[in-house]
Image (cartoon, rainbow, N blue to C red; front, side, top):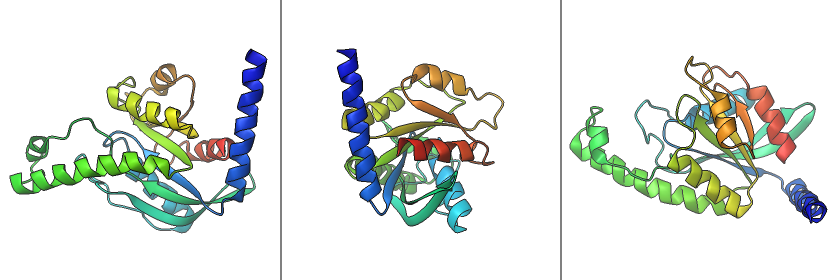
Length: 212
């Protein structure tokens, strides 16, 4: 039975690989909870490969409230080259309360609008799972890995059979622990990086080419 399942896995992986090879551009989604560093990573990728920033970032949650894409980003690793459509998505959250924004200095009117847009953004991000070819799940390595949001995101991806790399971000911070994320999601490739400094990105690109 195990031998059969292994053969089936290789067959599926081969099929996925052949489909990717036929694609001119691979749609790479960046998913994760708010303020995990998705947009910072998106900016670092596009700055490195096409010389321009991608989107705005902020210390306040839900700065990104709609799907943002950057097409035709060529990334190379160990002599291989692929073109990607990078898709930055709103942070996935199970609860968005406008009062949390008010506490951070945003006016009540703007906070309510931000919460409304953020809620719609989460719904849109889930819908976009049907359009992506591969996903980087960006998690904050300074926080608890077994969070309900993280489990929900990864469960949705697993149910759809989408190739996934878990990115343990913020390794530049002393309190970060990549191992905690590896322990929580041991069935996945976990790569520790700092989207802020760029540490670990070369290995992330290498892993990305491997799953594709």
